[in-house]
Image 1 (cartoon, rainbow, N blue to C red):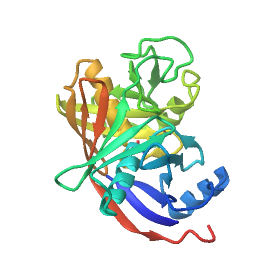
Image 2 (tube, rainbow, N blue to C red):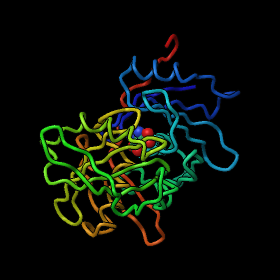
Image 3 (cartoon, protein in one colour):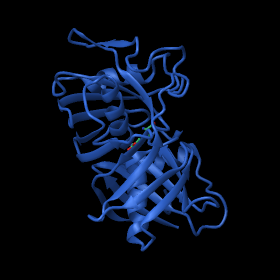
Image 4 (cartoon, rainbow, N blue to C red):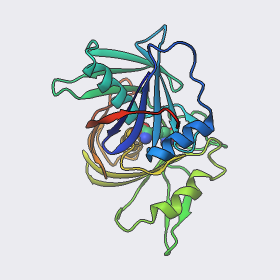
Length: 273
Ligand SMILES: N[C@@H](CCC[C@H](N)C(=O)O)C(=O)O
């Protein structure tokens, strides 16, 4: 079993490659939360052998909760396998569905995260609502209100607010209230997006179970889809997160494709954690 410290546009992971390991992983929720806290990472990504794909990919947030999808983590895992000499096309099974990855000429990994899910039951919401613009809002501590976010599931739940000014937005104050609102029975990731042009978006994401991160891949995908459904952007855009730029495309079959930078920082010794 090999473990790596990696990041995708600053979104920080421990990636554990268990494809050659014997037997199932025995990590508990507490083990995972402790492991991520000790190393100050956002998510744990575990690759296991899969009968139906090149690997089975599982994701845990830094609060120890397992989740359905992680766009940047999937990019990091695909990049690792490509560097390992794997074929240039890969498939991953995951709790969020089947995902595929291809190696681009630049060496970057582009992942197809599958279809954006748009029905209120798929987000999921606790009551029927138009997901183009939710009848939901949040009061800002200094006055004012954000309203009408789009909702999208990329295998994990997201809401995306189009905002005028990202710099002064108190994201860490409003993020926890949105995450825990009863409208979202599985909690929610919240994106705050400033549209600079129809193919240029500035984005910050307060992640469920991890807080404000330097980048969120599924959040970038959800932002493109939600903002396109509100008529604000095209189907392809460069999304600038605090930690880097993520190219995202929503194809005509409804699948969302994500690429961007990946860094392998170091190998980790997790014995004793
Ligand atoms: N950083 C990830 C998303 C990780 C999971 C998310 N916090 C959730 O709880 O759904 C990404 O790059 O997509």
